[in-house]
Amino acid sequence: MWDNRQLTALKDYIAQLEGMLDELNGDDAQLDGARRLISQIKAVQSFDELYRLLDFIYVIDKSGELASFEQEAFDFVVSSDVLEHVHKDSAFSLVKGFAKVLKPGGYSMHKNDMNDHLYYYSNTVSPKQYMHYSDRIWKRYFENDVQYINRIQLPEWRAMFHDAGLELVHEETRLEDLKGLELAPLYQDLLLDEKTCSNVIFLYRKSL
Image (tube, rainbow, N blue to C red):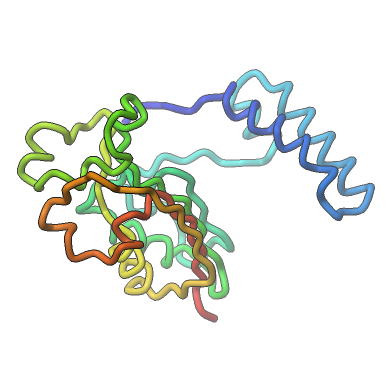
């Protein structure tokens, strides 16, 4: 595990958010408060300074199972481009952890990039090139710990959240054209939208 936090990138995103405030329907006091906070965030020089400003607590749970948090402690659990990097053997345990730490009625929202991340370095291959390889070939030649991806597909994620006791509220998917990509047998039984799904945003809710 290593620290991959990127303060400059985060501040760039915050600057983009500032440009979107005029599109919101909040009252003037709320918008002025948001602008002041964004200005303060843009001025911080470290993550420690940012966390003090926002009253955040930064925690690394080395178990990977949210074990350091109390049950039903949070109203909202969110991640972006994280789940595809969780080891396949630990994914369901983590999803169960989301359900465990959520309060009844709480929400769990996640953006999951299911593209082959090697595609970002060479777009001459399919965005889901990894689906061409058997588990044996993938693990021997392509799987790595530097940028691990688990190859878990949409129906498996849906099943994990369902089995953890969370209810689907909303789902958005982005599909890719996989023309010319010969799929390995373990992917051939997927439905067309499941095979071609490259990105998904899903929102789940813990029942009351």
